Length: 171
Image 1 (spheres, rainbow, N blue to C red):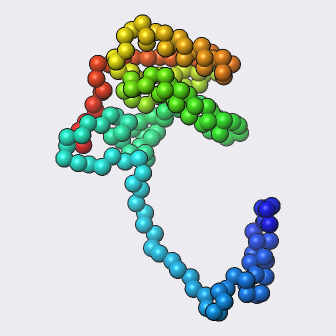
Image 2 (image 1 turned 180 degrees about the vertical axis):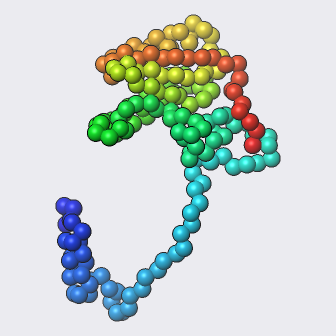
Image 3 (image 1 turned 60 degrees about the vertical axis):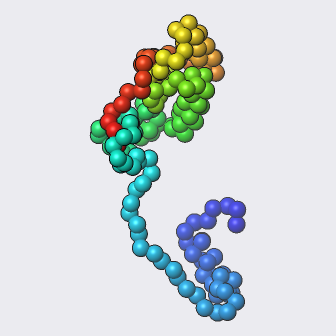
């Protein structure tokens, strides 16, 4: 049973179970419960409030606008037909995002954009000016050298600093 069954094999197995009474309850009645489909997507959406909550551009646009009004946060060619390694790129992106978030704790103003061009990896970020410039330069060099050593490819951090978070609109 641990191995995957084909669709005809699973149908034959289920019919055999039904004939022997394994699938039916001991009192002899069967029932099928169905509910109506509720086609409402609520994930990753900011709820509209009184108009006093500031949101960024990424938060203001819904997920179904990706590719139309807003771009992808990870740009690579692993999702093309015939290309392999999409899962590995996703895991690498999650690690890079967590590493940068931990290294520049409390300084990220927006989401990271990760771009892969050939063998080079570029990480673009907007940071808040909460640290002195010398510390920013040290952390940028530290991050670039450590990530380059881990991934064995050149990694470039492109960072812009802001005084406050950029507000796209209020919801």
